[in-house]
Length: 367
Image (cartoon, rainbow, N blue to C red):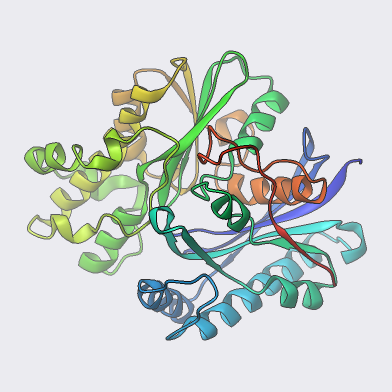
């Protein structure tokens, strides 16, 4: 066992593009966080991925590929290969200098209650193309062992807090398409779960009503007023009462539930929904964190950050503010998890996914 150099890849449920990040780690601690890169999806590519989510809705097996899922899987594999190749070229890195690639793939279905999670992407084809070992399918083993297959990043959050010398207890919040939190207790223990919607509903609303892919800076929401009766009704949804660990499919909630509102008021309601559902997560924290570190695309939404600060009433800082990378934290995490997988270390735990015992995972594809 020793320090390995890994590239992590992440394509989130917001469907904006592929994050690439270099990390050096032994799977337990972080030695260094290296450069990052990004490969945006084109409009046509996003259309294929959105249709894949629609076509995946009726899946009953992880291996089925009806509708356009074969096309979408080939697209995911090709674009991820392009992203890695461009990253290596941009940073003057040779393939031989990389020990492993952590390939998350594209989630098109996540239904833990039905024991099914589907991440598109052909890990074996990616390894052959890159001529680098690839660890992929990191959620499947956890789900097979009784876990919910999410969230996956808590072990990385724990290592990251140690790397940064953060005072505990602390919370690390990721605002992706779905939001998830890791509570790191005073004793270093981990409790993690999805808190509810992140950016996905806001993005869907803006795209549907304005043609823009997101609420830039949260300015549209800031001009609106949230529908308080609707918010009160949403926040009694059974998901928010359920004890963690718990995970949420991107499509459990729909932006169409605010379809009767103006563009501004709909954005305000969905943004408030994300912020208040994060605050509800405090109901389950064993140690109330005095600091929250916020990462993910949602850190670019100033109105969302303002609402979070108001509802959490704690010191809040973005990952960028700590010298981390708010946008690339999940990509770094999957590089870290790939090394843990190579070392046979646990990726998931009873307090992170509900799995009965600590479980490793991932499938190794050789070049």
